[in-house]
Structure formats: C-alpha cells, structure tokens
Image (cartoon, rainbow, N blue to C red; front, side, top):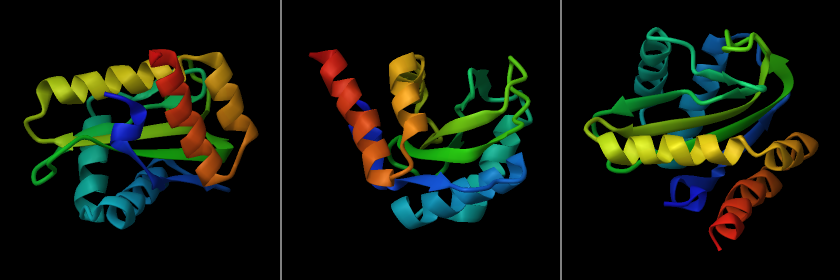
Amino acid sequence: MQVADILKPDAVKTIASCTSKKRLFHDLGELANTSYGLNATHVIDALIEREGLGPTGVGHGIALPHARLPGVTEVQGIFLRLEKPLNFDSVDRQPVDLVFCLIAPENAGVEHLKALALVSRTLRDDAICAKLRANSDAATLHTILTAEQSSQAA
C-alpha cells in the first residue's frame, strides 16, 4: 500500500482559517463528500465519535483523525494543510497544521491499521513535513505526499 492508493488528488486542500476542531471535521466531511461521494454528516459524526475516545493529534503539528464507516469499500484519505495552526489537544500540546484523515470500511481491521501506519510513517519524516508546510498548492501537496512514498519504497 502506498499513499497514492488511498489519497485522490482532489482530496487534498489548503485551508486559510479553521476556528475549531469541530469546524475542521466539517471541512473533512465536505471534502469526503466531494472527493469520494461519502455522506458528509456520517463522516463528521464518525470523526467526532472517534475523537471522543482520545485525541488524534500525534504531535509535531500533525493530526491523524480517522473513523470507520458502513458502506465504505476501501480506505480513503483526505489531507488538509492549515495556514493557521489549530489547537487540537495533541499529545505534545502543539497546534496542528497538517491533517491526514482516514475513512475506512466498518470491518477493515488490518487495512485500516496498515493505512494508519503508512500515513504516520510518511508524516514522521521531517523533510516531507517541511515541504508540505512550504507549499499551499493542492496538486503540489499531493505530489509531495505520493512521490516521497514511492521513492522511499524503491
């Protein structure tokens, strides 16, 4: 599995301002709807429910919100770059500016975990994060996320 397998080019976006975690989940839900045809309300509710189990801000300005949804057939990713970092209750208490959301099938145990590990590994790379933070163009962000992964695999 590579990032390109789970992240469509039109599921990548830069957001100028996001005022709350709830607003961020709404933005993710809307993008899941336009990119993958998912019901935005179901995505938002699932993300909020999952976040209630514990924050998905993993530190270093990165959040990995994720949820499982009935009716989803494969793991699907959404990436948002926030121009203004958002307080996300992260483990290191730092605001978040890079958000990679995963929506998985309701019963996708291993695939969901593999995707989460892949995204986590990708965003643990300081060079990749620096490039993501230095660019706001969605196509460039998608290229950074997908090209870096395929070159690491080689």
